[in-house]
Length: 185
Image (cartoon, rainbow, N blue to C red; front, top):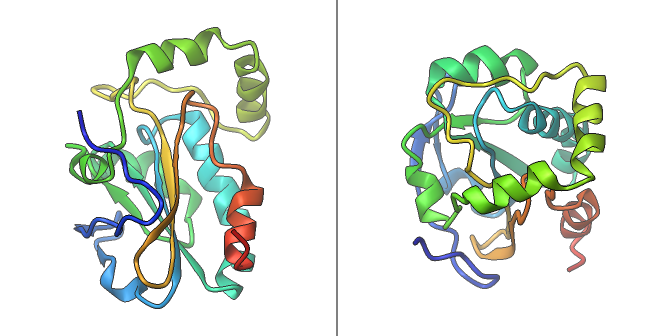
């Protein structure tokens, strides 16, 4: 089992290439606040809705100095085919082997994935996904049991908030991100 990060830990470094072929590492983000979001797989309707909502908020976040990196446990071709259609204004990384996920302690949990399916609130979330025009699509070879996670990292590269989803649907509240952006913890 991978070690989960805690507030106060240094954000683990990585080097990757985004879906547009650009290199991505944490070095250029020194001196800036950063949200790193780990999603499930690129065809996940819930994940695509979250990217859409990030994209809507991104101009405001960017004005306040917050950058975003999104990571999917899918091959780059799938990321381009599904998430790439949104033209997100931030880097989207394909990590099909889950190497960056492991560095951040992002878990795989069949029990939590099943608990999400049996949670009565999931029907409401599915309705939101469909109303926004996204579909619950299977992605061949995807890891259905991957749990999302989001990390707020300060200008010094220190994790200030480590949010590991307990259900697939319980993402970090936008209010928490907004408080971080406004320097309120």
